[in-house]
Length: 195
Image 1 (cartoon, one colour):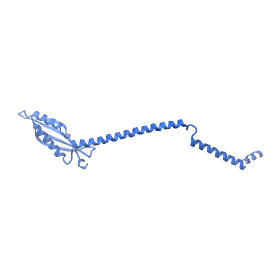
Image 2 (cartoon, rainbow, N blue to C red):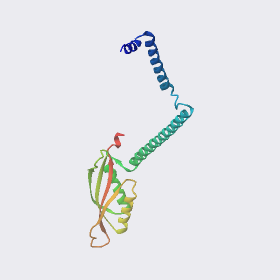
Image 3 (cartoon, helix red, strand yellow):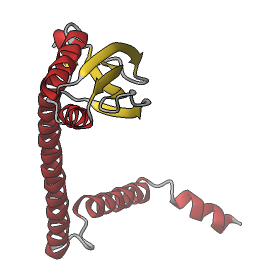
Image 4 (cartoon, rainbow, N blue to C red):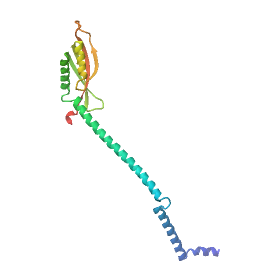
């Protein structure tokens, strides 16, 4: 039993204790050097592979940036086209009703038909605060050729007019004149004056 006791007292000697501490510090330095320098697998080949992967990522990012730039250009073109369409075909709220009635009067005069009473109905468009749909119901009287020209001129109007329905009423007794009731839809831009 005494020998065991002497062996454990051997570790209490300063030289042995200092050797143990130095050995532990040396082991810690070796571990730190391995972590810092990565000598296993951190050579030139690994760096080249890492560079190739980074170049590939950079190429992918450049493609995404280019696609985003093209998307922005397309959106700006679409916005410009939308504004041009609205300016050309859709009347603003201040002049919408009078513009529409003037256009229908011009078309009726040019076609040679007689307009009967006209009524219009404005409706909100669900999901849009910028536009109102106006439905005009108009009755006209004229011969077949004049009414055909009237419908053709509505179709070719510089304003955005949609023929929703066309109903013929009973022909008059003389048979030369026909009565037609036509329902036309168009839109009015509420925000035109605000832009």
